[in-house]
Length: 383
View 1 (cartoon, rainbow, N blue to C red):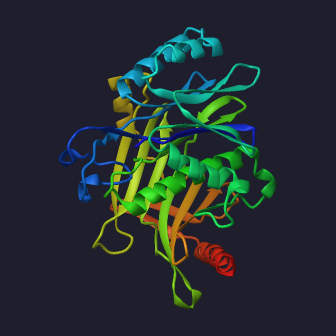
View 2: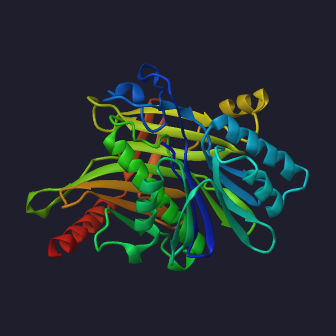
View 3: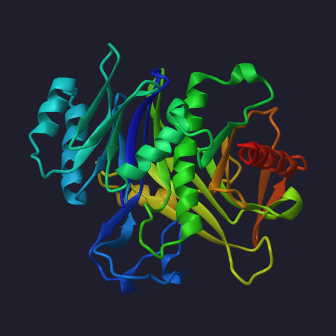
């Protein structure tokens, strides 16, 4: 399934979120390993018309002023984006040209959503897509088979006035010790991370039995003064928690899955840790994946340079902890997003050594998480 969304957070910061999974009609016996799930270890139930094929970037930044996501046939999307890439390099990109090009591809062409900055502001666009108009973030554009699901998740995070009192997701931004450092961009990125976090935790906690996974994690594009950027240097950690008898909150001793996202130029590097069933707690399987852009081919020199580069540390500027909480009337995904500074607490600290990676947890972090979950439980119980 594909999940791509474009929205204008608080009507100030353009955001695009997109998954990485490519599907095809290959048989289930040929399923590949993905960064977020080793599909070969899961038993597939039922019959499906498409299966995971691999990973590709579905979000692109062309030049510095065009942010675009796609869904549909990969070869056709690649051709359209390569064309835009060369047009931009020649200095001929304009909103009129973009509109004419993407409109001319036909009704059965891939869908596209995104933003173009032309010096007078951000122009949002959508072709062969679904839209939702909101008071909080204006028009939201969706692409892919996951559009209906995305509408629910984005609504939970970005449109609280439209929610029931107790939605199945909750976001807490845990910034540095100085609240004045929290900008509109921080809040927008945190909201995007919450959207991707809910999708990721649902995928990892559900497994792939019904093949509804979007797959392989998510990229995020946001706007800043110098242009569009992909969110770099971010670590996702998935935990489980449960409210037991006597209202006690039990949290897993460590994250069950960790993914680090970083870039070498426009090459996405995904480094993953996953718990190994049957092994002692804290024992993880390691993997590293490299995902190139759609709009151009990588040279062999670029590939060799990437493979020779040191692996990125799991200690990131952005740390996103997602807790799948059981024991409530409805399942809850609690998203705790921390933008680290030199003075902020290190909630998780990762240390690589010859045999693997050690994870140290800040003394007060688990208690803070338990307090968040318990407060949520009391609110729901009182309703």
